[in-house]
Length: 314
Image (tube, rainbow, N blue to C red; front, side, top):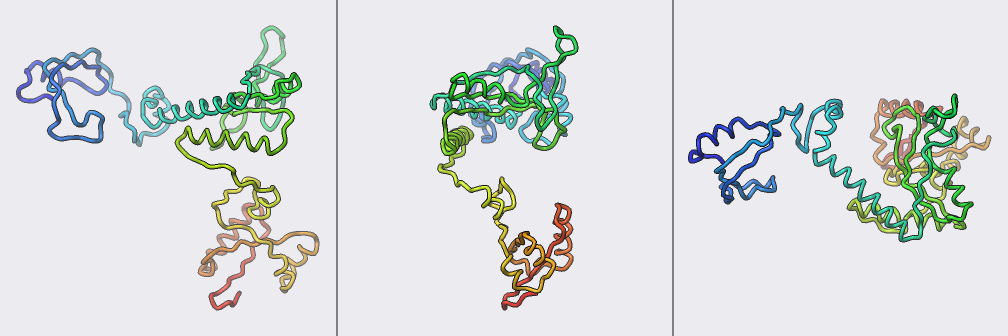
């Protein structure tokens, strides 16, 4: 605190201070007249009797606060400043906690952590490899691993029957929201196991990893056969919260006069429908818009049946 009792030279020095200056203040700690619970020192203040400016600093290009509206391009340019913000630091700390929990879980379950080589033979898979020219072997190239499965298979054959690695993977793909050139995956391999053994180990890993992130989840998880997932959701990785499940309506169609769709069934096809609660209120335009959306995702067409409260349909 600086007030009318503060020495004039100290007051003037304080007035010259700017954001990011490094200061040393000496004085008496006292209770704040007006408490500010938003900051850690919100209940106390220092009545300054001596002030030193240890280092001056340029004003940063943006204010370093937890909530910021600064565009991402500027924040990435000054990444070292952006990383001082609490949300980003918490992201790094959470990743550290999850990696630590994963390692401790695998160690407790008799896995051996083994690093596999980064420079390896090219193994074209779903993406292009990043290549490294060899200085020693003129005209030859190493590749960075898309994933380390080649070497982990060697380890299995060699008798390391429980292998684990937090493996760095490199894939020369076009960027998307969920893709980037390099990423880390938890890579594991086990010998002489059944499907349920793998599921049990992964369940335990997820429980511990989410716990490290502050979320409690309870096993056993729901297990859904692939065919059931496709029949109910049309996807092998469904979001079960979605609610609008698919229903086989072939028997209804066969009893109808809907000849085009009946031909599909008679030729071995399937007909499924989605029940939309409250969908009877949709206008013709709403249904046309939904039809266009379905066609844009590969459907030939979209039929609709509206059931009214009195049981009639159209």
